[in-house]
Length: 491
Image (cartoon, rainbow, N blue to C red; front, side, top):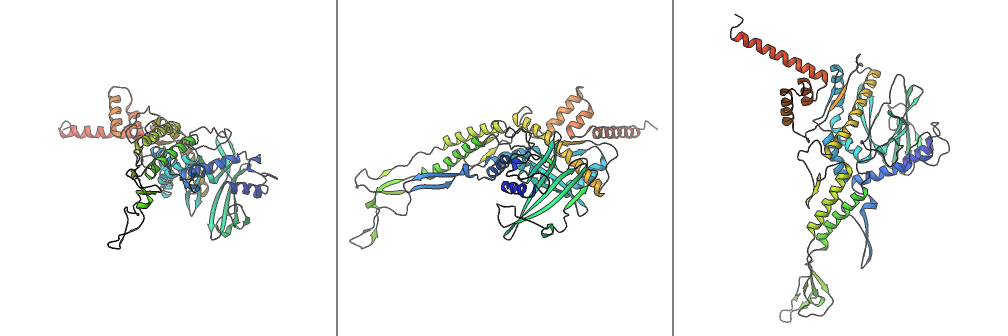
């Protein structure tokens, strides 16, 4: 993908008026993105997928010369990314909007796009590759959401508020040809412009030649100019981690970006653990003469002293004597390997924001700690840190959806301001029953209000909590009136 990006800027950058006579991505002055960073994204992607040549291709020497094999892996980058994505965003999370009408419209858009499942998947990709993008668009009278991974997104300009311009890359294979779709999102003065270009190539190393969009996308326009947009029509999400690799870049880094040495050591230890059983298997040394075929002079049948098909026997060229047959079985170092792997897993947990003991290896698989953790634990603090950024991103996404809906007349923007809150699943800190009991005690002792308790228990906004509290009071008043009437007080 990185070579495609470089080729793209070499061949179409000048035409777009962005650059002239460039040789590498880092030469582009108006797009200050380090080309080496995209090489790192490719590396992180390979590690996340479970095979990175520098980690997993092993060369070793034997009597017959140098051999090559593939190192076994625990694939902890996948485990880390999946676990963090799961504890942050799942089906228990709720997106609350103070405006009731807008809330229904947004819920309809999100449900139509299976947002909860897709967002959790791409949240995992975000933690693995350093970022991801959600790009709303209008198609077939509906607003749809496109999800893009970090390796298919190149920022073009940004400020303190976020990324303003970008280009999206999408590769499609059709028979022996490879097509690359480039979608530019740029500003020309106050006009938002989306430009589409399609390139065709016979190989992966070259962008190829420009071909008509109708080749693959007959209904896509080459250029769309939009007036009235206040922000870019995409939202970039990234982990709440400082980018210590390129401190001037708006791009994020994955959870394990600074833990590559630890990840490699874990795979070395796990590979050694697996090979311990293969290399430490039981062996019995016997003379070569003992495994040769011998003819029984009485019966004429071919016999051997030992079964030549049994792999436990190793034939050696030495004379037969009383001490010649030797059992050279070795003791397996199972516990030592498990202890070493667990020590490295604890180090990895610390480096990636998890509490010590979050992951453990029992000799069969990696176990994830599922017990309730305290609100002061490192895992919970890390979870909340990422949630702050994700909530801000979801708020931006809703604004983009409203902006698009208003443009195409899907639904109207509310006249009044609205507020978005995301209630994340905090069940890893304490269960719902414990939280309800806690809030009841606080209200009973005058340490909090009923409204704040309702907000805490249900994850409501202040307006929703006030409405709920009013409904509770009305029900209580009605029940009291019925009770009085039952005893005939009003007769």
